[in-house]
Length: 263
Ligand SMILES: Nc1ncnc2c1ncn2[C@@H]1O[C@H](COP(=O)(O)OP(=O)(O)O)[C@@H](O)[C@H]1O
Ligand SMILES: [Mg+2]
Image (tube, rainbow, N blue to C red; front, side):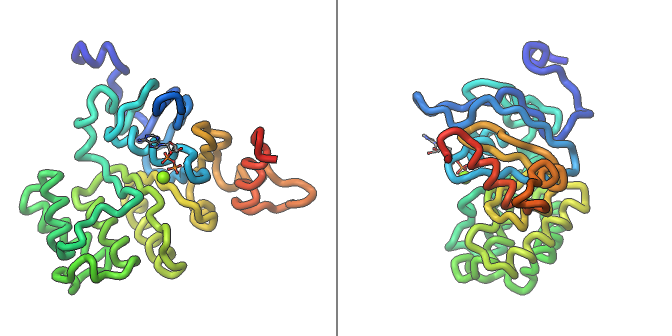
């Protein structure tokens, strides 16, 4: 163990995929993420829910090492992300809220670009390229310009680009926003395929049908986690006379309306 590690978090590789403590991020006087604690075991499909502006994207930026926290500790795949953001970057994927594809490049060129970002050796790229094109159902569309693809295709290409380096952990920030129900269903089939290969998924969504399919959920509200648990446990905890068998949407409405200033 190096001196820097002894000064930070203890080294431990047999850890959950994500473990964060008191994570906080302020922008001036405003606290966007306010002391959250969260543990995501390896292999889980974890849903991170909350209204617009509640701190989801800011949390993901800190977890991926692209933004420094104001306070708190983050361990991702056993590494201390705050101290050593580069150590995990080859092992995680990030599909950001605005798909980060180049409109003027073809499908193939976008994949090649991301392979370059991750320093993928040529043979690995050849393998991964095939896997990704098949998974995203983009075989035969390699030479199409990205700007000519429909939203559903671009979304799958963005997923392909985010997984070109075969990450162990994938962050997806509202990946299905603005996509029709059929494409959303197909996209989730892809996510399950990744999960089936052991990839841990950290997903934000506003669609409660998607939330219901996660292994575990956390609700963030004004920068704080106000509930977490499996969909079944959360639903059971929020059953009442009015909603004896509440949906995840009922749970969400219940949680938010119970917050001070919401009623
Ligand atoms: N770079 C920034 N500078 C100032 N405020 C920011 C910045 N990024 C996010 N915020 C604010 O932090 C809050 C949380 O934003 P965000 O994490 O994007 O929420 P969500 O992804 O849940 O919609 C919002 O009020 C947003 O305006
Ligand atoms: Mg966001």
